Image 1 (cartoon, rainbow, N blue to C red):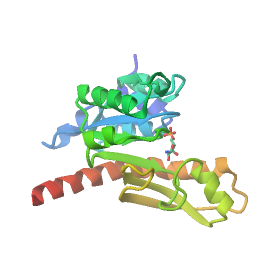
Image 2 (cartoon, helix red, strand yellow):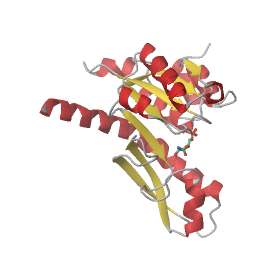
Image 3 (spheres, rainbow, N blue to C red):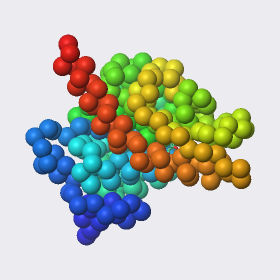
Image 4 (spheres, protein in one colour):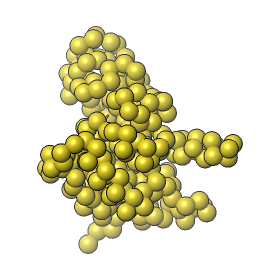
Length: 226
Ligand code: GRF
């Protein structure tokens, strides 16, 4: 049986030195309790897990929620020993009903911060108000350019020379909330959607955990001011 550290490494990530939850042992600050929402491959989830395992982010992933039965993120979650729950949007009558189930699942798992890592559904006020100011999303463009679906394709079609990725707070309008971090990625003359997306993802994996740490500091600072 491999350890959590070995499993993170086998998720094609570098070898970490920590067991789950041990990041908190470095200081007295309790780890942020994260809930990840993902629809697909889950490479951003794995990158956050790596940052935690390496002691770069003081957090625990309490639960992964996924909406597509075949989503690869569940394999990564199983491999890393992170609990996961399928909430298939096709089995809910409304977006609100799905979001209500998501809120219940996240609350039962004790989640404080909601991390949308490739969640391909629009969310409603039900989720946003339940985790007010504590929902983050990653998007593969320099917002406010190219919001919505197929952002990389949109950038290529527009002929921009620079695109990138953004981590932002989630508001009701898709991809619209305050931006926490961005990285620029040059568009190369012979780029396809796949090659450009791959280079953007390298940057996504670098910044998401950093943005989570920044957001938690921002929320703490605001709370201290009040
Ligand atoms: C990422 O490119 C993210 O920007 C977008 O969905 C993709 C998810 O990728 N929102 P993965 O599932 O984390 O590999």
